[in-house]
Length: 383
Image (cartoon, rainbow, N blue to C red; front, side):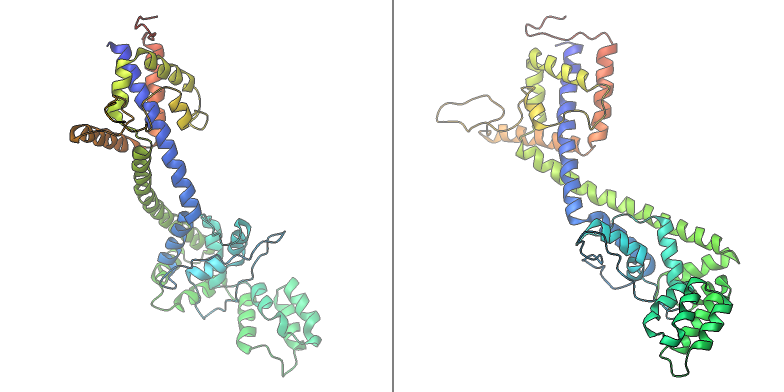
């Protein structure tokens, strides 16, 4: 065995690790999608930041789709009632619309920071139009025209006309009218600060938002930027949690694939070491993979089987017919210990992930192609 053969053995092992790393990653992506792990992570972040029920909702707030997406209406939020919470953000119309698009019983797994800040600001200090929409069914007939004009042009003149046209016995609460007046005539920054101070002391966002409002001063844009930065920081933390959580599952899937397909590193190494033909096959496969992306490389189990590597299981031994085929179930304690060691090495290698092994494969292929290493043929001669 020479340098060329040793390099080919390394390439063969790398191809096997790459194929089964890709398989473990794809299984993980499927499971994560079905169980909505990313959506759970997003909700975990929102509940950590804004509080809410002890457990995040397990069902989507989106309306079932039947043709065009339906945008669920969020319950009206009134200034001073301090209803800011994770669920209030999830129920915000624009965000609820995102969930209605992803489908029934599905939850969004990504929320832009701009959408988050818009939701929080509108919940704390709802625009006049939002408050007007919440009382649309309470407007008496004689004030409907003035109400429509006020909704189209929410300014002081149209508000005064609307209140003038309202009868004395109308159903609209005076606090709501005052809220509309403040939304139209008041200072948005002062309204925001008052809404934050009205949050209950138990709300985890209250202290943070008060600090942001103090630092932002009279600039609403500065407050919004700080709000988005806070959200991005929390998303970064949750992303780290998600990667650690997913890594444990990838390891579990890697172990399962290793045993299911009998991916024994020791047996594969031995087979490649002894067979120049298989060395040449894996070298050619590595050359073919060079220059392609990870998605373009054939990493299927069928492709691995085509290299004649000892992967998978063979029928058990029959009677006195004892075979040296490493794919058979081992007989005796010693062979089993070697098999377990080979599995352990494979499982440990798969934890590095498909991108790592794809990068290693490219480097090994370049060394082989540019380093003057000749391939081997069936009779072991160099070409």
